[in-house]
Length: 389
Image 1 (cartoon, rainbow, N blue to C red):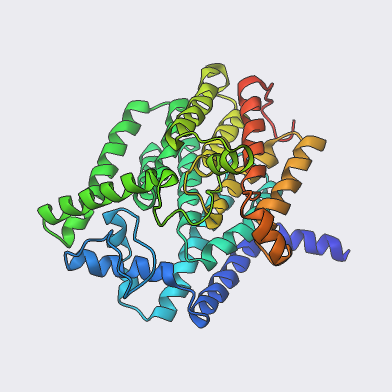
Image 2: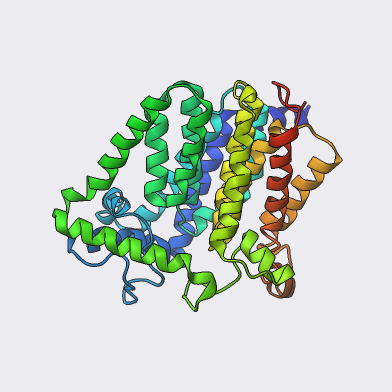
């Protein structure tokens, strides 16, 4: 009887909302208490720098460590957080991520409430890790999923909005645009992307003149180019091996291949799924494609780090609830929970984390394996129209 009541409680949308509300408030208070808000300071000061015509992408070590790496548009959107107390800003920032995550999970179409809860709980620990670091990754992956939801509901205008919103934070959010190829209204989608893209691009003009904005975009391009070369340089973004295919090949097999070539190979493998045009009407195929795109953005990212994996785990969770369950798929899920989700935590002794997990990119490997298996399913699998078959 008690187990039935607990199961019903955990399967309610209101339970998800309550968990996320508590998590957002607690994490905001925690990060303020331990002064773990460097990333939030980066966001907050970006609006100040933009308004005062200061290079967004320079190092400002007197204000925070690391660099601002987002678009100039993001520096506009963060404006409300610059006029409220720090402690309140931290709580509200966490709650913004919680809201995006909540709606992206609860609005998933053609899927039972129980399956939605499975996606939520599989992703929850990585999500909390993300917001504890004041990261934007939960918002980005939620935008990608919300774009998919809009496509499914024939709301192409809003699908384009969420894709541009996500990519205005980090460029790889643009990968979700691949989804438009399997839906009708392609011409409209392109026009809407141009509309939202233009609007977001010029948004900083509310704070700076045209020439200053062009200068900021030039600075952004320069920094992105520099970072893309970082795997072969002493760029400060290269503290540890990237948690990606690139890092795995380097640390396990000493394979030294430029990251761009590996990314191009990944794009070819991803796009090869689209050859099966007869499956475009298959909801499982479309969900698998979404999962593949989402995981791809992390495992082929040459500077992927631990908080980024809320994206890959979310994609893997969506794959799992639509996949047929057998020994292999359960094994892949368990490997991901153990090594991707739990390996950075204190469950693993510190010496194991520092001597094995981090140097040998164990966090990334289960997601790489899942993506490889998922691609085989997309290329050759006989996909039914229902869950778990």
